[in-house]
Length: 93
Image (cartoon, rainbow, N blue to C red; front, top):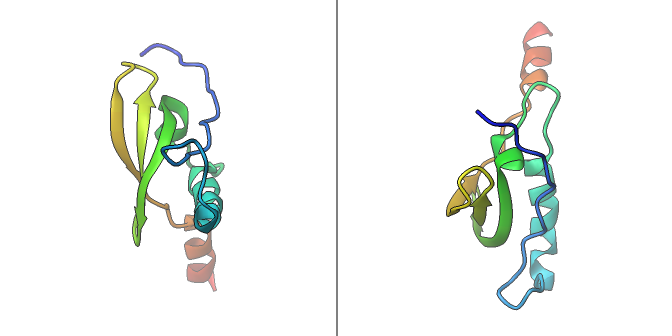
């Protein structure tokens, strides 16, 4: 497996290159979904460049993204990963 330089993904935009005002909340969700935790590193953040947001739903967001390894475009669903450290703390109590 070859090493790939990490490039932060561009912000998703609408077709005309602007993010609609009603989707500003989505940008916060995307930042939260993309932020790696110390225990978990997302392959999505490392291997893809986001081209645009295709849709969002209850279980995550779907992006048009370009794969840095094979340079092909994909629709990629990104889902939030629960914070496992909170589960561990609750079990200890």
